[in-house]
Length: 357
Image 1 (cartoon, one colour):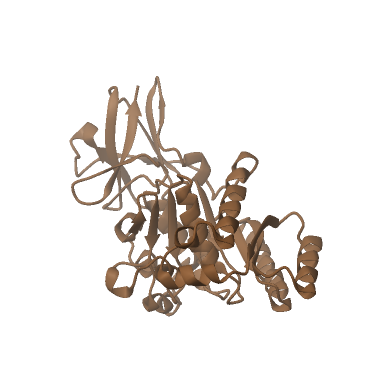
Image 2 (spheres, rainbow, N blue to C red):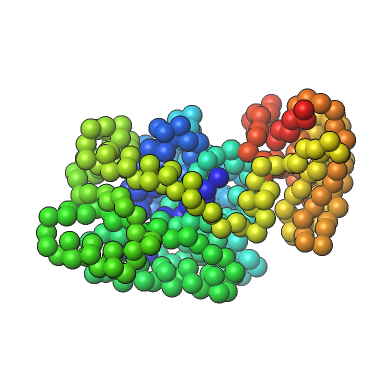
């Protein structure tokens, strides 16, 4: 799973346009995609055809309510594309969390607790370097920086790269940046000069794909559908299909920076001849237990022990077959955030699944 933020402190450079159309195009290419609208303006929500009346839970709940997870809040755009919507209430998150410890880790911690059966998680950020943006960047391994053809955008790229350097220095968190030329009319001379300057300054980070200026993209956003559905033969649709393929091609060569133990734990419990080893990454929990079909969903569960590296662990001897399970973390029942294999339960949520062969 790749977790990617779309960020630039400059407004109007195409973050939301890229987020919604890239998410939709990846889904059309049979990838499971989650798009998180992390902007109080809620433009990604509107661009996919949803309004405030269509949802009660939103991105703000992921920040403020520990027992509301992604699987509780998403809307289904189509079977391969889910959206966590946002509205104006998200603008109050920074003030509410102002004095909270680790406030910049709220989104990352929520994603770790959530069931994420996705190939891609995209996070659309507001046009500012704010608490919401820091949360998104700390939850990701990559960031796409859309830039439009202006001198202000070149300056903004420098600022977002400074922010990435601060996160590396202060938080030990590294990000892989991808710079995307967005809304480019390549005919004027000054635009070609901007392209040359981007190529010279950021050769290794600059994506080959270019999103050209076209009215079809604006028409699609106004209609609440991606451009690949609004006009599949348009230049905008072609550009986003090319971008999606470029992103997919990176999977062969890209080693996404792990979020602590995220990548190591991503595929869930380890099954061997010695049994099943369950691992859980809840560093601030007081108690972690596992319960499931193998113990008749006991409310007491079976305890995990905390190791020196901060991970919780236990070994169980399970019979052959499929076993559904959940972790009980300080009394809260949660799916395994590192296991993409899930099944729906009778309560409208998801249980994690392990198969012993």
